[in-house]
Image (cartoon, rainbow, N blue to C red; front, side):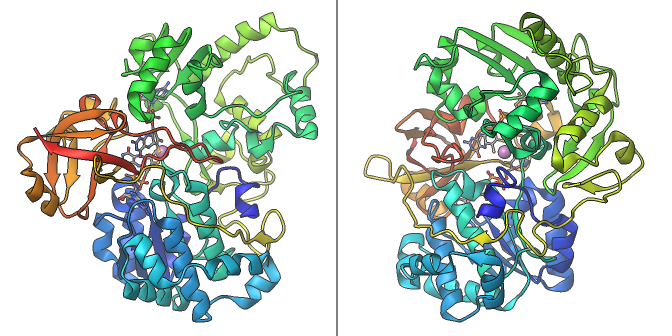
Amino acid sequence: MAGLATTYGSGAMSNSMDDIAANAAAFFIIGSNTTEQHPVFGTKIRRAIQKRGAKLIVADPRRIDITDLATVHLQQKAGSDTALINGLMYLILEKGYEDKSFIAERTVDFEAFKEVIQDYPPEKVSEITSVPVELLHEAAEIMGTSQPMAVMWAMGITQHIKGVRNVMALANMQMLLGNMGIPGGGVNPLRGQNNVQGACDLGGLPNVFPGYQKVTSEEVQKKFAQAWGRGTELKVGKTLTEMIPDVEKGETHALYILGEDPVMSDPDTKHIRANLEACEFVILQEIFQSETAIYADVLLPGSSFAEKTGTFTNTERRVQMVRQAINPVGDSRPDWEIISDLAKRIIARTPRLLPLTAPHAGWDYPDTAAIMAEIAALTPQYSGISHKRLENGERLQWPVRDENHSGTPILHVGQFASGKGKFMPIEHIPPAESPDKDYPYIMSTGRVLYHWHGGQMTRRVKGIMEAYGEALVEVNPEDADNLGINGENAIRLTSRHGSIDTKAWVTDRVPPGMVYANFHFPDASANELTHASLDPVSKIPEYKVTAVKVEKI
Ligand SMILES: Nc1nc2c(c(=O)[nH]1)N[C@H]1C(S)=C(S)[C@@H](COP(=O)(O)OP(=O)(O)OC[C@H]3O[C@@H](n4cnc5c(=O)[nH]c(N)nc54)[C@H](O)[C@@H]3O)O[C@H]1N2
Ligand SMILES: Nc1nc2c(c(=O)[nH]1)N[C@H]1C(S)=C(S)[C@@H](COP(=O)(O)OP(=O)(O)OC[C@H]3O[C@@H](n4cnc5c(=O)[nH]c(N)nc54)[C@H](O)[C@@H]3O)O[C@H]1N2
Ligand SMILES: [Mo]
């Protein structure tokens, strides 16, 4: 949808957690293990359901904890979400539940969208998704009658070659129901990392400067050239998922990796290792000697969140102070200081136009408050944000237009940032890999409550290792019976890309035909098996669907 995808880059929650928890009559959670992966919000949602009877629809191939609270659990086949969402909209239209005045006043291109939706009658959708027709009706009925409804999603729908399509289909749904720009509604991607929202906001994407200002816009280039001395003749760069595989194409010669452990977290580990090995120069800035460290020519010791002062921007666009609690351990230093020192050495060799409008264009920042002042000067959404206001206890959600503006808890009120909301005609496409005779199971991957990604941080904690100390692959009891797997014996998972040996957790959290693996342990990481097929727009890998063989060994 134009209003979301273009104005706010990769997306942000349109509403706030407290607002949704207090005001939504229904929640639609799709592809988010909310109670385990976003426990703060998960708890608020749980309370809203238990205390005020809000309805909950969960669409997830697995029976995760929050499905116990669901009014309806749509247990679709992994990778069939676009068809599912379109099928629900078919029924919403059939029953006349669409918000006709919202569609007329605030949106464009409804007719072309509606035509595509006519291709998704319940019988066909049930065949693609394995969701019974009656459940589709039940869910559509709740969506049509319990308003406002808030939609929440996470990696379950984005880590697919059709991740962007899925998100656009959900934006269509919320416009169709008139659930945009109102309390208790909206489109709400639950951002994962503590500061992934902040990283995107401040230019950690290949196509934008801070504030989603396009690197290809001449006007924007001029603004940054005046501030920083560089910035003209820029073109769109590469994403992480392109940079590393491009080593073997001779297009990437050096990598500066900061706060990422690609050997654990990128798809198709064997391929990643080969590329890191082949790369001419690798700098790794880390708080630990991660799995990627063996490929580093230079290791720069960064310090952790507890050893530095700055801000994180959370999933609801709230900018929050993080204060130094302990001195940096050993020789480590805050990441920004290391980056500044590197930058000073680089700019010493590249003459620039002076004077520049940014007061610290020479990278001579005295502290992170000065960095925030520069952010405010150059980033429209952050214009009114300063460490001083945050230290005074103000709760600021961007856009914060100036020092007197109190921020924006709900986006798109009255109008989309880019004018009218655009309905997109979105067709379903199948995943890149499908099960066959040799690889008969669908493996999906993700996290468990106890661990964090590659596990560098969580595998060092004794209590956590006592609770969850090895990689377990979830296998349905029916499949386990057929394969002779009992949870004690060793199993082997093999895909077209690699193989891991581990143990099973025999559980009906997964349906028959599906297994679920995590990437928290180096000796049995799911990414040994995953493939690097990317969404053509966002370049996110299809971590959620890999065809695998499962054996007892
Ligand atoms: N404890 C803990 N919490 C975390 C993290 C962590 O590592 N550990 N990581 C953080 C980060 S960076 C992120 S991005 C978030 C991720 O948060 P989530 O996206 O909630 O977590 P995932 O485990 O990736 O999987 C999400 C859900 O998608 C479902 N799923 C699998 N395939 C499909 C499909 O085809 N369609 C649909 N609709 N659902 C599917 C899975 O069953 C799972 O319930 O978690 C954040 N929170
Ligand atoms: N199969 C599969 N793979 C996935 C996913 C999936 O669902 N399935 N999810 C994907 C997603 S959504 C994400 S976000 C990625 C996460 O992937 P990564 O970002 O690679 O994983 P992390 O473990 O969060 O962080 C990487 C490193 O940062 C270091 N670190 C922590 N704090 C600091 C700091 O302050 N400074 C510095 N310099 N380093 C620090 C840690 O020691 C750690 O080794 O994984 C992706 N990979
Ligand atoms: Mo993430």
